[in-house]
Image (cartoon, rainbow, N blue to C red; front, side, top):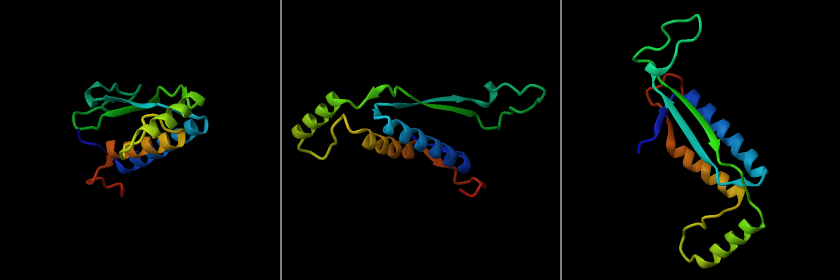
Length: 125
C-alpha cells in the first residue's frame, strides 16, 4: 500500500515517540514488537464537551498508535537461534531473529516507509 501522509509536525512527533520507545525496548533486551494503528474517520469523532462543530466532513481524522507485543526478551535461546540461522544462511537476507538493537533499527526503517510528510503542508516540514 501507500504510505500514510501526515502533517510534518505530527510526523516529527511520531518519529520521536517511536524512536524513544524502540530505544527503551532495546535497552530492556526486548524484541518482536509490532505497530498497532487505529484510524478514526472525521465523522466518527465526537465533539469535545462544551465545544460543537469540531468534526466536519473535510477535517482530518485521528490516528491512535501503539507498539504492542513487546514481551519477548532476547535471551540465550534467541541468541542461539540467531547464531544458528546466521550459519545456515548464505544469501543477503538477515536471520529472522536478530538482536534488540538491530530489531529497533529495522523497525524504525520500516516506520519511515509507512508514514510521510504531507508535501502540501504549510507547517514547514
